[in-house]
Image 1 (cartoon, one colour):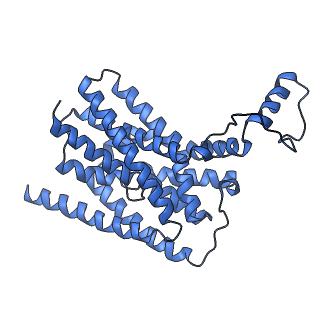
Image 2 (tube, rainbow, N blue to C red; image 1 turned 135 degrees about the horizontal axis):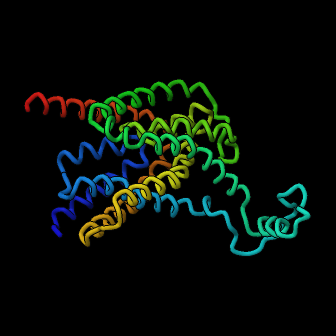
Image 3 (tube, rainbow, N blue to C red; image 1 turned 135 degrees about the vertical axis):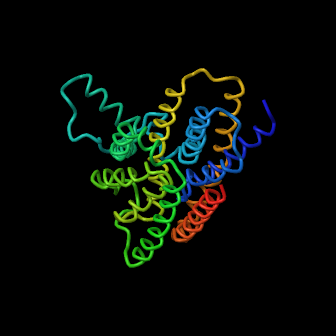
Length: 301
């Protein structure tokens, strides 16, 4: 194991932890970083590594939002009114209803069901077209174009949004239809450079959520999406890791976890007082830099 390579892993974990949650495209940053800080591993491991270190970022979401995510009570609680309109005549079902009344936050269960609905469009498209997308769209031209396009959209949408008041400020106010439509917006993120958080935040704002709610729902939606994506990558790669590869992967995840905690708290604090236009301008600058660098490099070559 090389200490230089380990330092590269740490740097990649830092980039992942910052860019995964800000709507600036972690893929765009990884492409640019890989050009200058190339990890000396097999291509197969690198492709898997860049996805699976996201598990560290996801664990940060779970830690920061644990109280809002975990749907079960530790102790039995008394309710003034049952969640159910009527108890079932079936003894087993009635017992489950009783358990839910006293040990389950049903509003959180409903939230998770809405998140599942939001995951469906991306899951279907990802399973059907993942290989095609990676083969045809995973290049600097597409990434730069998406950085520029969504950078402009962020600015235009925020200007449009100034004249509107959000109709949804809490997850409980998100309807099933809105949950599905946010999931449709998430499908846009299968194109590299779009940014999963950027696509869902834009979708949420256009559908009437507050900026804070759009960001929060994006974080929650990432939990099953990234767990699923990481699981598929590990299965495709196989479990034949070398000792060095395990160290690289765990180190990258750990760094992404620590940095993500800071990034998430920063973004939630930022959106309480500011809009997303600064991220739009940042995307435009990054898109121009990526396009200029790779076009110049190809001309020289």
